[in-house]
Length: 408
Ligand SMILES: *Cc1c(COP(=O)(O)O)cnc(C)c1O
Image (tube, rainbow, N blue to C red; front, side, top):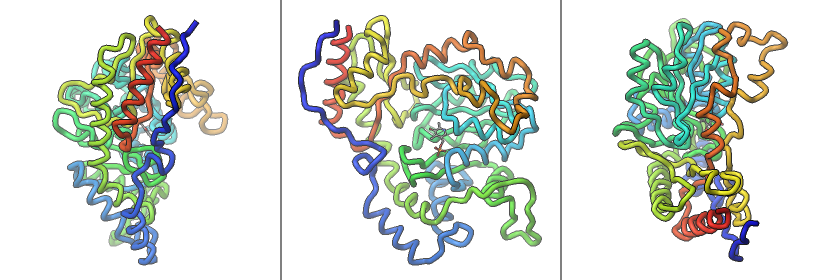
């Protein structure tokens, strides 16, 4: 039988889904007033989105940044910019947001899932290499939870095979690897400004590149491929309207000015919790590779089910009694276990593009993904926030310590 926890008042933690955990205020309101006063709310005519794009590019040190409607849109734009042929393969991670995968299907490409490191839940050069085939057209990596993938060996591998790399940085604003911001290693990088991300416009995204030709394609892919400003503009190819509005860009400009401080506060709070949890048997604090800067979109524990009763699920249940809403198993199952992949629910009854795939590329046999399943079994994702105070961190730390003890 589990011992019961010490009765203790529940402390409400800042929540990134509402005002308690979002740094939205006068700065955003001021810019919103300004944009409304201009009467121009489309980015094709206004100046706010252009300013956002310039400032964001400058912030991470990249040549081109384009704002768009979501992180999913940014990823769709990146994939379409690379322009795979139907049936081409993109090697990606088994643990990511579906917003990184459905755009591949829309472009006729086959996601091929690489295994992940069971502690960081990130892909590595080794796990990617195991999935490269003559059909591979690109590599997509996700810097999961704000913890950077180790990019040196990944870029070496990509260059050896002459493959473009798309970096999904939706969770990793301001994260660094080897002294360089993530989003500047690969060929194209994507960010999301959805409600819960490091900076938010409710919904929104950014796509970045140092390559002029790809930058041009990204711009066109946001604008129905209409050649704005060209001597003889036309709709050059199939593309959607993925424009961010000037209203969102006004909010984004205010948020961008706070981004450094948001990242710093998240890191500081995480470092404090790392110290407080050090040495507790049965849990492991986030592993950050030497030379990497993790910016903690979330704070993940690795839970040892041999030490803690019912592992991550058990610990999550106990933490819930403390009012701490953690997520065991993160996305619950690897992306390829979702119906869209299992039942090939895409375009009518065609099964496209899966019907073009090599059988090995769409082999979703669980036995082939031991590290992915291990990673999901052991991970416990704690909500994280730049507005956590020392009191919040003390509360989280005390709660984890007591819950772990109760489950031993
Ligand atoms: C949030 C997220 C996305 C999708 O972004 P949206 O803005 O929600 O479309 C893609 N990839 C990752 C890793 C994400 O966390």
